[in-house]
Length: 288
Image (cartoon, rainbow, N blue to C red; front, side, top):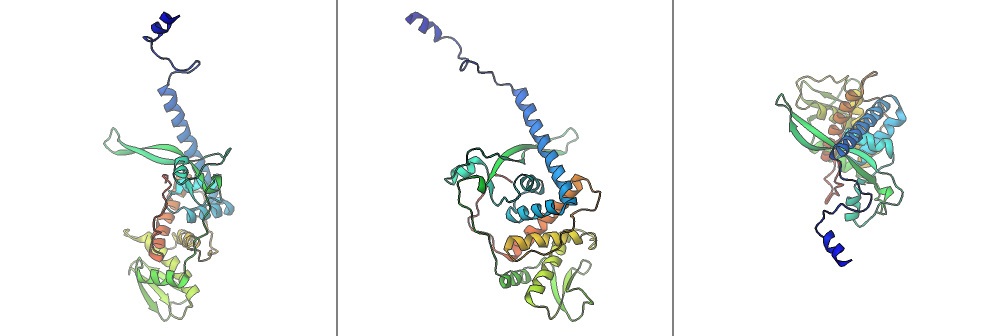
């Protein structure tokens, strides 16, 4: 009996009974399918956001709460969890002393894993799927909604505008208007603070989107500027502008919608940074 045990010591361990050897090819195929499914869901969510006001409303709500995520991931999060306010991996919540509640299903988002060189010499990006959970799916305590002082937000934007601001005695109708050729935002005199804040935020969104470009079609970007201003107002707790026009023209494909939403997100982040100081010790989720 003892000799049998000694003979076993020289044999190769094969793991517990019934265990299967790691199949790298099957693992890679599973990862590929996860990526395809996630991108397909993001595309479907983008098309809904461009055609369904309720889906767009969910997107704007999550975009305001999660400013540092890409449009693709906001689409994925809003589609799965329209009320999401903070997301992170299970490890992220564990580091904060919280745990994911039993039975909760993860939200799949997409993150760049690494870059690679294509045959033609250009740089490509490999993506991976990451599983995250909203704070409502964990034992962590929810935060109170953020609310900025409207006067301070307006003063900050006027002090740090994306384009020069000039008061005007007669704009001929609009409360404010961004002039790309002149690189200036003209504002009608005599507006009260709520009117001024609303008008200036929208025109500043135009200016933020136009920076770095030669030509700028203000009429074509009107809906995007309105949506960027909408996100900023929600993010700072300044009220919610009524404009909810689709981000892209009717018939736009999913890629075009996602590109428009990314542009809207960049403008909203730019304005938010100008209108409110960065949060100290901002919590990172380990996911974008």
